[in-house]
Length: 377
Image (cartoon, rainbow, N blue to C red; front, side):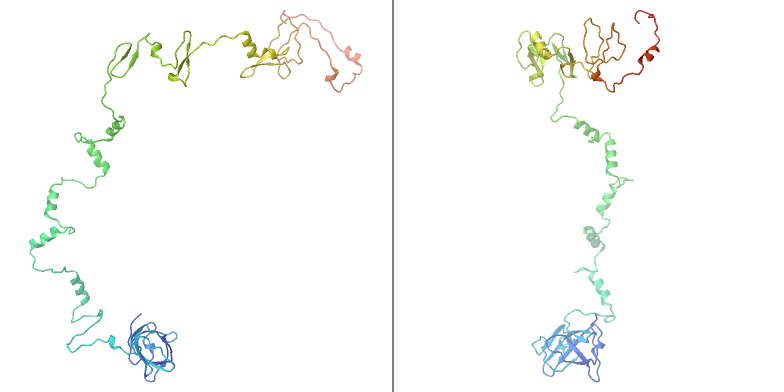
């Protein structure tokens, strides 16, 4: 808020202690502190006729109070007076500590800044001050053009066109641009046949060369094993013998080479296994465990003896002079036999009932005779 001074501002207060003054109203012939304005600051003097205090306070309309923001001088050694009971006079007045005056030498002493709303002796100090701030210390107005040029050329941030800049400009090719991208510069550089540029193609070649590689030329070789400069190797016929093979053991006459991936060279000399004897076949087929009427069946991994049953039919043509017996026989095609013996077993049947008048049924049967068309039928 503003700092305000008004004439004839005089009120009383019964405030005690060192707190904010509560104002009791203007004396006759004077105006109240409302003339200062709510929230504004002013100078004041307070006294009870014995003790006194000068200071700077803020007037607040709500409650009509005046703060004791700063004590300038007092009967309490410059500190706020702790008031007792009774009426005190409070009025606006400028303390000597804040009075500006001309001394006997015609000088005016000011302890801080001076704010001027207009001109001083016709001069705008704010404008002139800004100009003055822009002039370098010890600057002169009698420098020659050569001196000014030298100073400008020596300044690193003057952005002037110097003799050195002119020399650089003369060295730049006509129509040269400064906006080429890295890719454009790289392409132009690699397209120049005599730049010895390290191109992407050369990088690819370099990546394909093994570390520590040299310019080795494969020699030609003749004899049992021949080779040429391109590295092609050919072994002559009938020259590979036992000494040229990498085998894990020493052979014995009659042994053969057996592949053994876990051994040295992956080859091992091994004896030819002996043939099966009757006892070997008997053990392998487990003939002693077979029962009469069983057949040999492949399980997917080995052979085993199995019985003929309805669930496991003996699926083959029967052409034998023997008389085999089956508990069940399933025929999926034509079955031919000299004699079929049919039997009836009551234990295999249910709901057995006698047929009424069977002779009448039999009389309805018509008998026929016939000849086969050929002997196979």
